[in-house]
Length: 443
Image 1 (cartoon, helix red, strand yellow):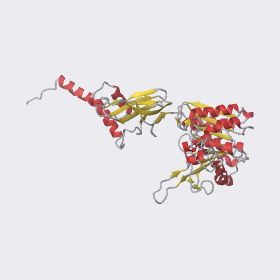
Image 2 (cartoon, rainbow, N blue to C red):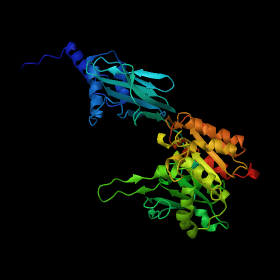
Image 3 (cartoon, rainbow, N blue to C red):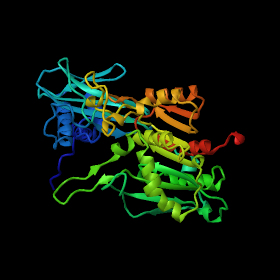
Image 4 (tube, rainbow, N blue to C red):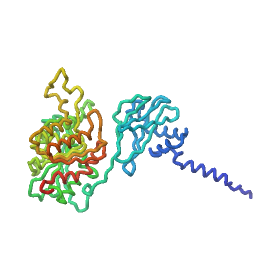
């Protein structure tokens, strides 16, 4: 019988080397931004750069033009709340491409071979934000609509989590509402929450209205869970909540797209939106439930433009709302350049829409208004909020807090490191509700 030769130790080592190459993450095709980052940090090699190029080309295969700098970044979140960000750009071979961001930060992009394709991956911690622009050979490109991102993560407080044995209120999706008077032609979704304790309450319920309401009555940490827990614990009074989305003009039958009316409703600093609520929507709720008619028993809560809208409602209709909760409020100048008074025309017609988008004026109005209005205000914002042509959100919230303090208003400004999102606001909603319902005698 002929015996086959035994494999030599050299053959075994070759096979072992091949297997290591197959499983080595720096040679296998990268699947995550973390793996791409490791390839870019490894000693430069054609194989590594080819794999990085293939990774990004696959991710950006639907992008028609990568030279303008308005393509979206890539994000990979990590367990600690931070994550990786990836950029991909096309220019001429040999160009110098740099990513510039606020706070003096910059990251040179790496050309992948001699292809004219450039890539960069960076690791960012929790509570970090980047507002960036591409620079090609010293020429700074305009910031695109996708030129800002950040990482922001919070843990829910016990009051934001469903607890065993806590009676749950009823959330009802109402029929879509079509405005007939103040915003004719607009349609909006809305919900009404009634706590379990309402049926046994001997006094009229308090009221809270949420702008962009659909974002507050669903998913983890939503306001209905918070209200269930706080009302059961008797930390806040029995409160009915109304969650209202901005109006939209429905898509037409001739292919016209849906038109959102949010800015018209939220950023216009007049009594119109509050009066719309008072005359068109809230009567439906008042007819069904016993609700206090005192303005100090009514809260308006919102984020971003919804936050400034909440303050606008209380400022112009202080007979309707006496309490405001604003998360990352947009107390900024939303006017277009053509809406500013010119030297040739020092007056503007009162029916012109643009000039009234002036939430940035509230700090001045708060200081000049005497006697002060009866408004209790909760503000929240983070120092990584937006900074653009409309203004600096965090600085404008600081201006609001300073004006409220100067004029003797009861207010609480919670500062953080978050971005322009409602995440931090929703995380502190339990504290905000307890504080804003607290009377002077309870402190």
